Length: 266
Image 1 (cartoon, rainbow, N blue to C red):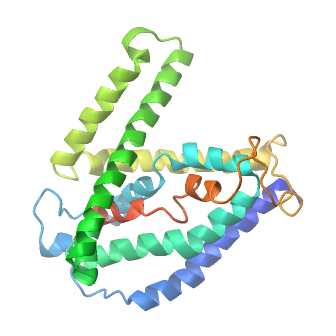
Image 2 (cartoon, rainbow, N blue to C red):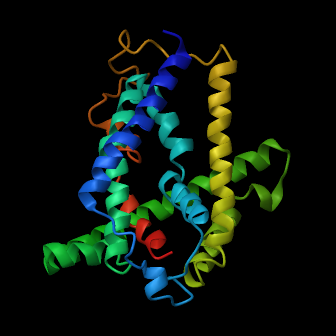
Image 3 (tube, rainbow, N blue to C red):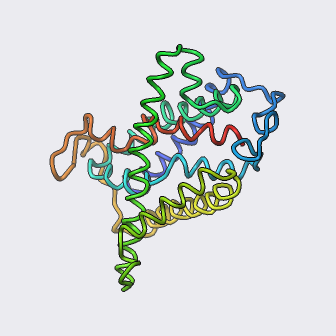
């Protein structure tokens, strides 16, 4: 089967999952279009700020994807075409459901964080467990999301012939951390609402570029799935459980429940 056919089948599976299984999930949750959202009910000009659906979509897309399309997918591809199945079915039956319920439960609970929602339904002990877990998780994710982009910028500057401060990892780390603090402490629509949608559009353009490359460059081939169903990792790393935690965002990542309330408030 041609390489592009696998991509088309995976994309068709994702679209079918969204239209069919997504409708089932929505029916189970039972959204109420007449219920006022947190941004309309309790606006504060800082965290609870009404934004357009397009902006909210692009920001949430960037929150979910992050560095995933750069690191997760490239590292996951080392295991071979079996990753196609993991991403497709994992996103349909786990990742998409998780993200939808996280955001909608927060919206139904006045934009509460996942820890507060956990405390409401599972009690104070689990609330404190989730608080500790969220803090540890966010520290690790924040570190990756600072070091990763800084390293990429340094690499790009080095390739372009730049020198001095532009090729200093520490310099870019400081710049990124300052940006994080500014984006966190001021109104959500002042920085995040203006910059994140642009990054979200860039992410979509990147994805379109990859699609274009698959269809136009014969050098980009995907091995036959059924003939390479096992691990193709060059280091012999097994699929279980390393592949699942490397390509986690679409299927098993719990991180999305932390940024989803941000958009539930908008």
